[in-house]
Image 1: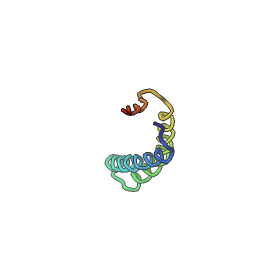
Image 2: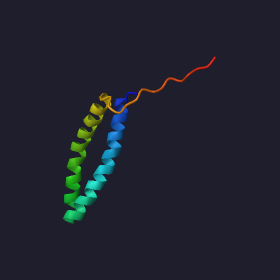
Image 3: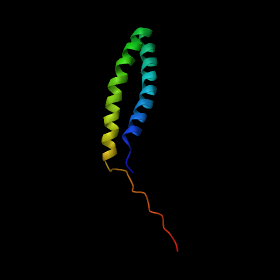
Length: 76
């Protein structure tokens, strides 16, 4: 089954929200500065969103680990 591009985009956005919150918290814990943590997470949200999107699109083309759906058997 092939994944639609809009599904990949929605997965990208939801994952980046999660990842950016994580980056912000870690950056804040390390630096102790909200502004610096926001700057770090503000930059990485865009770079990692682009990387994730293309990573997902590439993996969607690779058949490794995919199975074709079984056709249902119809009895007469």
